[in-house]
Length: 273
Image (cartoon, rainbow, N blue to C red; front, side, top):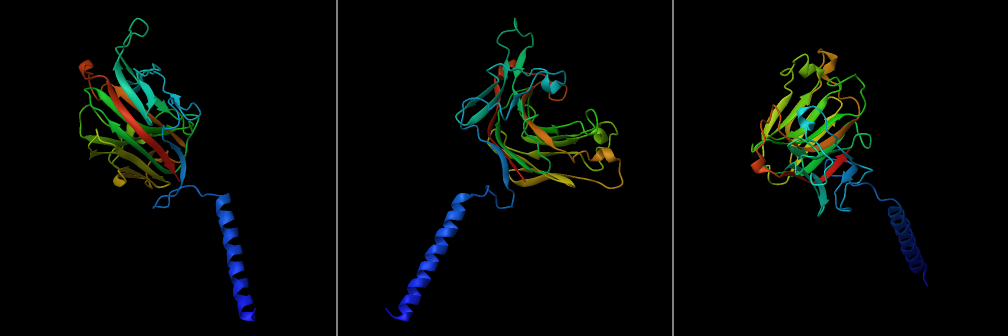
């Protein structure tokens, strides 16, 4: 064998050895999925592994006194997981001898189980229509860093009323609710939507602004301002999120029992940083 042949074989061998090492390294560690904008997926729920809510991820929202929670229930008919979807429902109460409220609604949260600070959240969902229906995707602070509500703020990624073909995307805080600073900067916006088709409702959260999105397109931005009351920006702490199918209240109005049941159907939830 000539020296040239030996050199060629040695080069080929080294190349194969290097390839095997590189291949072996890549198989040892697979990077987390990253989308085209550079966001890395840190949490997701696709509802396709079980036919029930994962208790490690989700809480059932309990009934409360505010309009949005006055019919919340753990009744099996108001939250269901099937066919890779989460169904949150508003229904006529089937047995008022046990629970006297006229309607029952379903909602879930990640409170105490998952919260994040800065990043992107997207929820793919379809919204059915009914008079008095009030589905929402929203966020609250995980801990009372600044005191009682509304000092820690509220981020409403999506709210929709009854049969409207638009969604509301809104910021609430002590600054907007108590000091009534709703226009500097504007704290809310509406965007046209086809709600009964699947849409992706989203938020991109940065240290200096909140960017609301619909199907990946920016719809509304709420900036952090300098030189205003400090309560304008409580969004410097971890928040958890909630998904709920609400009914009735001062904002959405009376409920039409003839339109029920009504559902918000969630395909998936994804959080990126």
